[in-house]
Image (cartoon, rainbow, N blue to C red; front, side, top):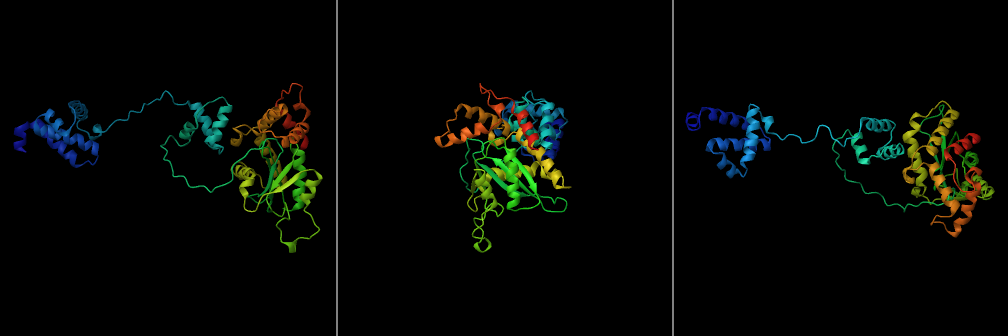
Length: 382
Protein backbone atom coordinates (compact mmCIF):
# COMPACT_ATOMS: atom_id res chain seq x y z
CA UNK A 1 0.00 0.00 0.00
CA UNK A 2 2.90 2.33 0.78
CA UNK A 3 4.48 1.67 -2.63
CA UNK A 4 1.12 2.24 -4.30
CA UNK A 5 0.59 5.47 -2.40
CA UNK A 6 4.07 6.70 -3.28
CA UNK A 7 3.55 5.82 -6.93
CA UNK A 8 0.08 7.36 -7.53
CA UNK A 9 -0.38 9.71 -4.59
CA UNK A 10 -2.33 9.35 -1.38
CA UNK A 11 -5.67 10.57 -2.82
CA UNK A 12 -5.55 8.26 -5.82
CA UNK A 13 -4.46 5.40 -3.57
CA UNK A 14 -7.50 5.87 -1.36
CA UNK A 15 -9.72 5.94 -4.43
CA UNK A 16 -8.05 2.80 -5.74
CA UNK A 17 -8.58 0.90 -2.48
CA UNK A 18 -12.22 2.00 -2.13
CA UNK A 19 -13.01 1.03 -5.74
CA UNK A 20 -11.33 -2.33 -5.18
CA UNK A 21 -13.49 -2.96 -2.08
CA UNK A 22 -16.63 -2.02 -4.02
CA UNK A 23 -15.63 -4.38 -6.82
CA UNK A 24 -15.48 -7.31 -4.40
CA UNK A 25 -19.02 -6.64 -3.18
CA UNK A 26 -20.92 -6.38 -6.48
CA UNK A 27 -21.98 -8.97 -9.06
CA UNK A 28 -23.60 -6.58 -11.53
CA UNK A 29 -21.71 -7.01 -14.81
CA UNK A 30 -22.28 -3.47 -16.08
CA UNK A 31 -21.07 -1.96 -12.80
CA UNK A 32 -18.01 -4.25 -12.66
CA UNK A 33 -16.94 -3.20 -16.18
CA UNK A 34 -16.83 0.47 -15.13
CA UNK A 35 -15.08 -0.22 -11.82
CA UNK A 36 -12.38 -2.31 -13.49
CA UNK A 37 -11.83 0.49 -16.04
CA UNK A 38 -11.37 2.98 -13.17
CA UNK A 39 -8.88 0.67 -11.42
CA UNK A 40 -6.84 0.15 -14.57
CA UNK A 41 -6.67 3.90 -15.27
CA UNK A 42 -5.50 4.59 -11.70
CA UNK A 43 -2.88 1.83 -11.79
CA UNK A 44 -1.48 2.88 -15.18
CA UNK A 45 -1.80 6.58 -14.49
CA UNK A 46 -3.21 7.11 -17.99
CA UNK A 47 -6.88 7.25 -18.96
CA UNK A 48 -5.96 7.07 -22.65
CA UNK A 49 -4.04 3.80 -22.30
CA UNK A 50 -6.67 2.22 -20.04
CA UNK A 51 -9.46 3.00 -22.52
CA UNK A 52 -7.43 1.65 -25.44
CA UNK A 53 -6.76 -1.61 -23.60
CA UNK A 54 -10.43 -2.15 -22.73
CA UNK A 55 -11.86 -0.82 -25.97
CA UNK A 56 -13.82 2.18 -24.63
CA UNK A 57 -13.68 5.86 -25.52
CA UNK A 58 -12.42 8.58 -23.18
CA UNK A 59 -15.88 10.15 -23.28
CA UNK A 60 -17.29 6.93 -21.83
CA UNK A 61 -14.72 6.96 -19.03
CA UNK A 62 -15.18 10.59 -18.03
CA UNK A 63 -19.00 10.46 -18.21
CA UNK A 64 -19.16 7.62 -15.71
CA UNK A 65 -16.27 8.88 -13.56
CA UNK A 66 -17.93 12.27 -13.10
CA UNK A 67 -21.20 10.64 -12.12
CA UNK A 68 -19.36 8.22 -9.79
CA UNK A 69 -17.27 10.89 -8.05
CA UNK A 70 -20.16 13.34 -7.62
CA UNK A 71 -22.20 10.67 -5.82
CA UNK A 72 -19.34 10.03 -3.33
CA UNK A 73 -18.57 6.73 -5.09
CA UNK A 74 -22.00 5.15 -4.76
CA UNK A 75 -22.57 1.99 -6.79
CA UNK A 76 -26.09 3.09 -7.76
CA UNK A 77 -24.59 5.94 -9.82
CA UNK A 78 -22.99 3.41 -12.21
CA UNK A 79 -26.31 1.91 -13.25
CA UNK A 80 -28.15 3.07 -16.35
CA UNK A 81 -31.01 5.45 -15.69
CA UNK A 82 -34.40 4.78 -17.25
CA UNK A 83 -35.02 6.88 -20.34
CA UNK A 84 -38.75 6.50 -19.99
CA UNK A 85 -40.49 9.91 -19.81
CA UNK A 86 -42.35 10.66 -16.61
CA UNK A 87 -45.37 11.95 -18.51
CA UNK A 88 -45.97 10.44 -21.93
CA UNK A 89 -47.68 12.81 -24.40
CA UNK A 90 -49.57 9.85 -25.93
CA UNK A 91 -50.92 8.49 -22.64
CA UNK A 92 -54.70 8.22 -22.50
CA UNK A 93 -56.61 10.39 -20.08
CA UNK A 94 -57.73 9.29 -16.63
CA UNK A 95 -61.35 9.55 -17.73
CA UNK A 96 -60.85 6.93 -20.45
CA UNK A 97 -58.90 4.70 -18.05
CA UNK A 98 -61.81 5.01 -15.64
CA UNK A 99 -64.26 3.90 -18.35
CA UNK A 100 -62.05 0.90 -19.18
CA UNK A 101 -61.92 -0.16 -15.53
CA UNK A 102 -65.68 0.41 -15.18
CA UNK A 103 -66.39 -2.06 -17.99
CA UNK A 104 -63.74 -4.44 -16.63
CA UNK A 105 -65.51 -4.58 -13.25
CA UNK A 106 -68.58 -5.79 -15.16
CA UNK A 107 -66.63 -8.80 -16.46
CA UNK A 108 -66.07 -7.49 -20.00
CA UNK A 109 -62.84 -8.32 -21.83
CA UNK A 110 -60.69 -6.13 -24.06
CA UNK A 111 -62.65 -6.91 -27.26
CA UNK A 112 -66.02 -5.97 -25.77
CA UNK A 113 -64.57 -2.89 -24.02
CA UNK A 114 -63.18 -1.71 -27.37
CA UNK A 115 -66.62 -2.14 -28.94
CA UNK A 116 -68.43 -0.28 -26.14
CA UNK A 117 -65.93 2.62 -26.21
CA UNK A 118 -66.21 2.95 -29.99
CA UNK A 119 -69.97 3.28 -29.58
CA UNK A 120 -69.26 6.16 -27.16
CA UNK A 121 -67.06 7.86 -29.75
CA UNK A 122 -63.77 6.87 -28.05
CA UNK A 123 -61.31 5.35 -30.52
CA UNK A 124 -58.64 3.37 -28.68
CA UNK A 125 -56.66 0.28 -29.66
CA UNK A 126 -57.21 -3.09 -28.04
CA UNK A 127 -53.54 -3.34 -27.03
CA UNK A 128 -53.83 -0.11 -25.02
CA UNK A 129 -56.91 -1.49 -23.26
CA UNK A 130 -54.93 -4.64 -22.41
CA UNK A 131 -52.09 -2.50 -20.99
CA UNK A 132 -54.55 -0.70 -18.71
CA UNK A 133 -56.21 -3.95 -17.59
CA UNK A 134 -52.84 -5.56 -16.80
CA UNK A 135 -51.62 -2.53 -14.89
CA UNK A 136 -49.20 -1.77 -17.76
CA UNK A 137 -47.07 -4.81 -16.94
CA UNK A 138 -44.99 -6.39 -19.68
CA UNK A 139 -46.90 -9.15 -21.42
CA UNK A 140 -45.16 -12.45 -22.14
CA UNK A 141 -46.64 -14.41 -24.99
CA UNK A 142 -47.67 -17.89 -24.07
CA UNK A 143 -47.33 -20.78 -26.41
CA UNK A 144 -50.68 -21.47 -28.03
CA UNK A 145 -52.18 -24.89 -27.63
CA UNK A 146 -53.16 -26.78 -30.72
CA UNK A 147 -56.90 -26.53 -31.27
CA UNK A 148 -59.01 -29.44 -32.32
CA UNK A 149 -60.06 -29.13 -35.99
CA UNK A 150 -63.67 -28.13 -36.52
CA UNK A 151 -65.93 -27.37 -39.43
CA UNK A 152 -65.67 -24.16 -41.38
CA UNK A 153 -67.66 -21.22 -40.05
CA UNK A 154 -70.56 -19.86 -42.04
CA UNK A 155 -73.12 -17.06 -41.97
CA UNK A 156 -76.74 -17.24 -43.13
CA UNK A 157 -78.39 -14.52 -45.19
CA UNK A 158 -82.06 -14.32 -44.16
CA UNK A 159 -83.21 -13.86 -40.53
CA UNK A 160 -85.15 -16.90 -39.41
CA UNK A 161 -83.51 -19.10 -42.04
CA UNK A 162 -82.30 -21.34 -39.21
CA UNK A 163 -82.63 -21.03 -35.43
CA UNK A 164 -80.51 -23.09 -33.05
CA UNK A 165 -82.29 -24.37 -29.93
CA UNK A 166 -80.68 -26.01 -26.91
CA UNK A 167 -81.27 -26.62 -23.19
CA UNK A 168 -78.91 -25.66 -20.37
CA UNK A 169 -79.09 -26.77 -16.77
CA UNK A 170 -79.47 -23.72 -14.54
CA UNK A 171 -76.33 -23.80 -12.33
CA UNK A 172 -78.17 -23.00 -9.06
CA UNK A 173 -81.24 -24.75 -7.68
CA UNK A 174 -84.43 -22.72 -8.01
CA UNK A 175 -86.44 -22.95 -4.81
CA UNK A 176 -84.58 -26.18 -4.04
CA UNK A 177 -85.33 -27.82 -7.40
CA UNK A 178 -83.45 -28.31 -10.66
CA UNK A 179 -84.45 -25.91 -13.49
CA UNK A 180 -83.78 -26.06 -17.22
CA UNK A 181 -83.20 -23.05 -19.47
CA UNK A 182 -84.43 -23.36 -23.07
CA UNK A 183 -82.42 -21.05 -25.33
CA UNK A 184 -82.93 -20.15 -29.01
CA UNK A 185 -80.66 -18.02 -31.21
CA UNK A 186 -81.06 -16.96 -34.83
CA UNK A 187 -77.98 -17.82 -36.89
CA UNK A 188 -78.23 -14.72 -39.07
CA UNK A 189 -78.85 -11.90 -36.57
CA UNK A 190 -77.99 -13.63 -33.23
CA UNK A 191 -81.42 -12.57 -31.98
CA UNK A 192 -82.09 -14.62 -28.83
CA UNK A 193 -84.92 -15.83 -26.66
CA UNK A 194 -84.74 -17.88 -23.45
CA UNK A 195 -87.24 -19.25 -20.96
CA UNK A 196 -86.78 -21.55 -17.98
CA UNK A 197 -88.87 -24.59 -17.07
CA UNK A 198 -88.94 -26.95 -14.11
CA UNK A 199 -89.24 -30.02 -16.38
CA UNK A 200 -87.35 -31.34 -19.37
CA UNK A 201 -89.65 -33.18 -21.74
CA UNK A 202 -91.45 -32.78 -25.04
CA UNK A 203 -94.33 -30.90 -23.43
CA UNK A 204 -91.95 -28.23 -22.08
CA UNK A 205 -90.30 -28.07 -25.50
CA UNK A 206 -93.61 -27.37 -27.29
CA UNK A 207 -94.51 -24.74 -24.69
CA UNK A 208 -91.16 -23.04 -25.29
CA UNK A 209 -91.63 -23.15 -29.06
CA UNK A 210 -95.00 -21.41 -28.75
CA UNK A 211 -93.36 -18.63 -26.68
CA UNK A 212 -90.51 -18.47 -29.17
CA UNK A 213 -92.88 -18.05 -32.10
CA UNK A 214 -94.68 -15.14 -30.37
CA UNK A 215 -91.50 -13.39 -29.22
CA UNK A 216 -89.42 -13.43 -32.42
CA UNK A 217 -90.06 -10.38 -34.66
CA UNK A 218 -89.73 -12.48 -37.83
CA UNK A 219 -90.88 -15.85 -39.11
CA UNK A 220 -88.87 -19.00 -38.33
CA UNK A 221 -88.24 -21.43 -41.20
CA UNK A 222 -85.96 -24.04 -39.64
CA UNK A 223 -85.08 -25.13 -36.08
CA UNK A 224 -81.85 -26.99 -35.40
CA UNK A 225 -81.39 -29.07 -32.23
CA UNK A 226 -79.28 -31.88 -30.86
CA UNK A 227 -80.63 -35.41 -30.41
CA UNK A 228 -81.88 -35.12 -26.82
CA UNK A 229 -85.12 -36.87 -25.86
CA UNK A 230 -86.75 -33.51 -25.31
CA UNK A 231 -86.31 -32.79 -29.06
CA UNK A 232 -86.48 -36.10 -30.92
CA UNK A 233 -86.95 -39.87 -30.63
CA UNK A 234 -84.56 -40.43 -33.53
CA UNK A 235 -81.80 -42.22 -31.61
CA UNK A 236 -83.92 -43.64 -28.79
CA UNK A 237 -83.67 -47.37 -28.29
CA UNK A 238 -86.44 -49.21 -30.14
CA UNK A 239 -87.63 -51.04 -27.04
CA UNK A 240 -88.40 -47.72 -25.35
CA UNK A 241 -90.18 -46.17 -28.33
CA UNK A 242 -93.65 -46.95 -29.55
CA UNK A 243 -93.76 -47.55 -33.30
CA UNK A 244 -96.82 -45.39 -33.90
CA UNK A 245 -95.79 -42.45 -31.69
CA UNK A 246 -94.29 -39.24 -33.04
CA UNK A 247 -92.45 -36.65 -31.04
CA UNK A 248 -94.52 -33.64 -30.02
CA UNK A 249 -91.92 -31.24 -31.44
CA UNK A 250 -92.12 -32.87 -34.88
CA UNK A 251 -95.90 -32.48 -34.78
CA UNK A 252 -95.58 -28.81 -33.79
CA UNK A 253 -93.07 -28.12 -36.57
CA UNK A 254 -95.31 -29.77 -39.17
CA UNK A 255 -98.32 -27.77 -37.99
CA UNK A 256 -96.37 -24.46 -38.15
CA UNK A 257 -94.56 -25.17 -41.44
CA UNK A 258 -91.16 -25.23 -39.73
CA UNK A 259 -88.43 -27.67 -40.69
CA UNK A 260 -86.84 -29.58 -37.79
CA UNK A 261 -83.18 -30.40 -38.34
CA UNK A 262 -81.04 -32.48 -35.94
CA UNK A 263 -77.25 -32.41 -35.89
CA UNK A 264 -75.20 -35.63 -36.15
CA UNK A 265 -74.24 -37.23 -32.81
CA UNK A 266 -70.99 -35.85 -31.41
CA UNK A 267 -70.92 -32.76 -33.66
CA UNK A 268 -71.76 -30.07 -31.10
CA UNK A 269 -69.80 -27.47 -33.08
CA UNK A 270 -72.72 -27.35 -35.53
CA UNK A 271 -74.74 -25.83 -32.69
CA UNK A 272 -71.82 -23.58 -31.80
CA UNK A 273 -73.76 -20.31 -31.75
CA UNK A 274 -76.21 -21.40 -29.06
CA UNK A 275 -73.40 -23.16 -27.15
CA UNK A 276 -71.40 -19.92 -27.17
CA UNK A 277 -74.43 -18.01 -25.91
CA UNK A 278 -74.56 -20.40 -22.93
CA UNK A 279 -71.06 -19.26 -22.00
CA UNK A 280 -72.10 -15.61 -22.24
CA UNK A 281 -74.99 -16.34 -19.87
CA UNK A 282 -72.59 -18.07 -17.47
CA UNK A 283 -70.29 -15.08 -17.55
CA UNK A 284 -72.80 -12.26 -17.18
CA UNK A 285 -76.13 -13.61 -15.94
CA UNK A 286 -76.28 -16.79 -13.87
CA UNK A 287 -73.88 -15.69 -11.12
CA UNK A 288 -76.32 -12.92 -10.12
CA UNK A 289 -79.61 -14.54 -11.15
CA UNK A 290 -82.36 -14.83 -8.49
CA UNK A 291 -83.08 -18.30 -7.09
CA UNK A 292 -86.28 -17.61 -5.09
CA UNK A 293 -88.74 -18.76 -7.75
CA UNK A 294 -89.03 -19.63 -11.42
CA UNK A 295 -91.01 -16.45 -12.15
CA UNK A 296 -88.23 -14.28 -10.71
CA UNK A 297 -85.64 -16.14 -12.79
CA UNK A 298 -87.67 -15.75 -16.01
CA UNK A 299 -88.31 -12.07 -15.29
CA UNK A 300 -84.62 -11.36 -14.82
CA UNK A 301 -83.77 -13.46 -17.87
CA UNK A 302 -86.24 -11.46 -19.98
CA UNK A 303 -84.48 -8.23 -18.95
CA UNK A 304 -81.08 -9.73 -19.76
CA UNK A 305 -82.28 -10.98 -23.18
CA UNK A 306 -83.72 -7.54 -23.92
CA UNK A 307 -80.33 -5.98 -23.16
CA UNK A 308 -78.57 -8.66 -25.24
CA UNK A 309 -80.78 -8.06 -28.28
CA UNK A 310 -80.95 -4.27 -28.16
CA UNK A 311 -77.81 -2.96 -26.45
CA UNK A 312 -74.98 -5.50 -26.31
CA UNK A 313 -72.47 -5.49 -29.23
CA UNK A 314 -71.75 -8.92 -30.68
CA UNK A 315 -68.25 -9.88 -31.84
CA UNK A 316 -69.59 -12.23 -34.50
CA UNK A 317 -71.57 -9.37 -36.07
CA UNK A 318 -68.72 -6.88 -36.35
CA UNK A 319 -69.77 -5.43 -32.97
CA UNK A 320 -73.29 -4.63 -34.05
CA UNK A 321 -76.14 -5.45 -31.72
CA UNK A 322 -78.62 -8.12 -32.89
CA UNK A 323 -81.19 -5.32 -33.35
CA UNK A 324 -78.80 -3.36 -35.57
CA UNK A 325 -78.00 -6.50 -37.54
CA UNK A 326 -81.73 -7.12 -38.03
CA UNK A 327 -82.11 -3.54 -39.24
CA UNK A 328 -79.21 -3.97 -41.67
CA UNK A 329 -80.63 -7.26 -43.00
CA UNK A 330 -84.06 -5.74 -43.56
CA UNK A 331 -82.55 -2.72 -45.31
CA UNK A 332 -80.45 -4.93 -47.62
CA UNK A 333 -83.03 -7.62 -48.33
CA UNK A 334 -85.73 -5.06 -49.07
CA UNK A 335 -83.64 -3.96 -52.06
CA UNK A 336 -82.40 -7.43 -52.98
CA UNK A 337 -78.82 -6.15 -52.98
CA UNK A 338 -77.14 -9.01 -51.15
CA UNK A 339 -74.81 -10.93 -53.54
CA UNK A 340 -75.26 -14.09 -51.43
CA UNK A 341 -78.97 -14.29 -52.36
CA UNK A 342 -79.81 -17.33 -54.49
CA UNK A 343 -83.06 -18.30 -56.22
CA UNK A 344 -83.70 -20.82 -53.42
CA UNK A 345 -83.54 -18.01 -50.84
CA UNK A 346 -85.93 -15.72 -52.71
CA UNK A 347 -88.99 -17.33 -51.09
CA UNK A 348 -87.44 -16.93 -47.61
CA UNK A 349 -86.58 -13.31 -48.37
CA UNK A 350 -90.17 -12.47 -49.32
CA UNK A 351 -91.55 -14.28 -46.28
CA UNK A 352 -89.15 -12.37 -44.03
CA UNK A 353 -90.20 -9.02 -45.48
CA UNK A 354 -93.88 -9.92 -45.09
CA UNK A 355 -93.47 -11.10 -41.50
CA UNK A 356 -91.81 -7.88 -40.30
CA UNK A 357 -94.00 -5.20 -38.67
CA UNK A 358 -95.54 -2.62 -41.02
CA UNK A 359 -93.42 0.19 -39.53
CA UNK A 360 -90.41 -1.36 -41.31
CA UNK A 361 -91.99 -1.20 -44.77
CA UNK A 362 -92.09 2.51 -45.60
CA UNK A 363 -92.46 3.55 -49.24
CA UNK A 364 -88.90 4.81 -49.45
CA UNK A 365 -87.61 1.88 -47.35
CA UNK A 366 -86.17 4.22 -44.74
CA UNK A 367 -86.13 2.31 -41.45
CA UNK A 368 -87.37 3.80 -38.21
CA UNK A 369 -85.47 3.41 -34.97
CA UNK A 370 -85.50 -0.33 -34.35
CA UNK A 371 -84.91 -0.26 -30.64
CA UNK A 372 -88.17 1.56 -29.79
CA UNK A 373 -90.30 -0.63 -32.02
CA UNK A 374 -88.86 -3.92 -30.82
CA UNK A 375 -89.20 -2.84 -27.19
CA UNK A 376 -92.92 -2.30 -27.84
CA UNK A 377 -93.16 -5.75 -29.43
CA UNK A 378 -91.55 -7.33 -26.40
CA UNK A 379 -93.95 -5.54 -24.05
CA UNK A 380 -96.93 -6.71 -26.08
CA UNK A 381 -95.62 -10.31 -26.09
CA UNK A 382 -95.14 -10.21 -22.32
